[in-house]
Image (cartoon, rainbow, N blue to C red; front, side, top):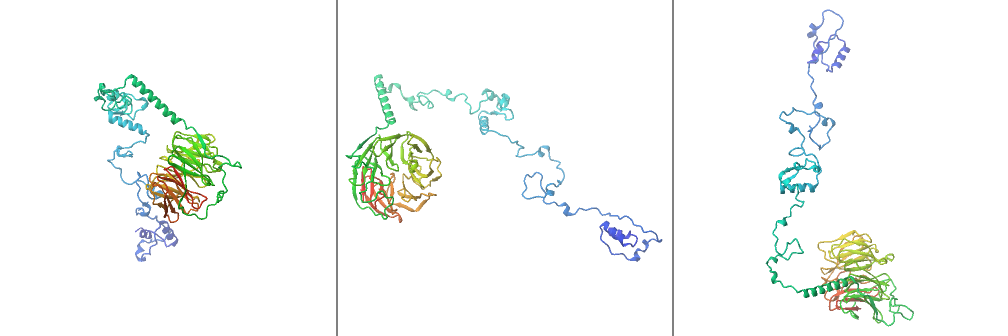
Length: 581
């Protein structure tokens, strides 16, 4: 309509003015009207050209695109799940104001009942006041400064607060025990005077008491017993040694520690035999211990001497070759000897006994060099095999700790305290940088030397205690005697994973720490058992190859000689040590 009016009120035929007016108004060009219909609009007299202002009477209507700015955002929102534009975020709020919205409703709320200001409150203080309120009916007013608390600073039963002087449930008020009736025989809380629940029924006249003389005599006996027991515990056993051979040195001045060269094999060689065979028969018995033998150890490298510890509190040194005599007896422990360990050269060895002492002995002279104790029973002891650490040794104790001593100072230099039960074994692995320990807590832990935190912990619900562990000759495997009557094999490098393909069964060892050993060529695994039998398995197939009745009682240890093809040494709780070939 506006276009039509514009064309009607436009005078003159000048196309430029028409184009200009069209461009100014922004109105589309319209086809011309019939000339006859426009005659009455033309002026009668010719004159100068006139142009009238264009009227646009249409109201301005906003385009849809200029109004819609996207999804409407609630101003109360704290987070948005999309990326809004600037216009969307700052668009004006639409709609009328709620006439029913009160000031309380308009106030900000962060909980159902209103707005809670953030405040720090100690957990103990809150619990203390809550319990006090539920018990006594009053509590501190949180809006009042706690340092200036008066009787008006309480809420709830203010009178009760004044009466109790503001005591809380955790503060000591009147003792209830004062209200109780004193019963005959004392109160159970006073343990020194408590005579038991039946004391009130006992008549003192019926109780038999010793006379003054008898009481004096009893006191003397008790004092003597206590003194004797204390002295026995504190004082170590007197050390002495007995040499059983006529001459300690030969015609060249060499002691029995010298490796013999006339036994048919090279004991100085570091190489193991190429092929090992099953032992068939008993060829010698070493008898001398009066009680069960607990451990046997061969002389380092050569194996020409055998060291044995026993429950008769003695340690004996035996010849393996020649006449196989008992060379020396070491006496110095007052209770059964549990474990023994040579140093690298064999010149010294350590012994651990139930008298709570660890003793360092000279293998040649038999003298006790030094003694160590931390008032706990040592269950196992091991020298550090490194040449530069021969002054250090570790012992697994009954108090769940592994204790490291320095023999030069006699002091504890490190404690490895992570086990949850008595430590049974310690075995060095990975070129002596680490050691593996087993315990009564049915776990296996791997430690870095001198770092008192285990870096590997192996414990499965199906695992049993493993009180005997042996490292294989090639250093790759750990044979662990498990208390569920099987020998488990763990890798001794890196991951210490259980080798599920290598499980040796068929013997009965539950309850006994029967020592396991390997043949030098890794062909066989040997172990004693609770029936006194020597069991021999094939390493590759895990089949039980051979079983020999070796001892009348428990066969506690079996050692395969490192330089012999078929010589195995066993010891048992019958007090005998036997050589098999």
